[in-house]
Amino acid sequence: MELLESFGINFKLLLSQVVNFFILLLILYKLVYKPLINLLDQRQKTIKESLEKADQIKQKEADLETREKEIVVKAKEEAYKIIQTAKEEGDKIRAEAHNKAKEESKILIDKTQETLKKEKEMMLDELKGDVADLAVLVSKQVIQREINSEIDQDLIKKAIKEARN
Image (cartoon, helix red, strand yellow):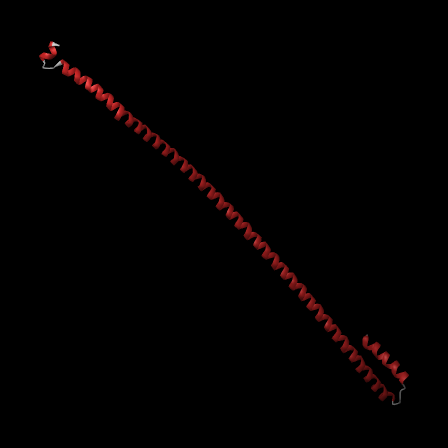
């Protein structure tokens, strides 16, 4: 102690300052350091949670992007299927229209052929009548006599048979 006094240090004052320092250190520990450590721990925990949430968000974003790509692919496939179906339906309708037009043209051709056939028959019948009249006239002039109706009928029938051949 004398050594301390020789340097001008008062032991009681030093002891009181050391005790005050430890009391101040204890008060600072309780009031400042501990809440500060807790605050830093909380901050660290918040940062860690934020990083984890950011990773989760990135993962969800990647999942959404993957789902979006899948949806786009499915939409393209469905659009392709719809287009193919529409093309097939169009081809089917076109084929049906073509077949219907063919049938209608065939019906029209058949009707035209039938009309022509009837007209031909009518013309032949008319021609036969004209030939028969001509044959009667020629035969009257050739024979120069009167023909009775029975002979006339036979001549007409023969002329018609020859006209058919």
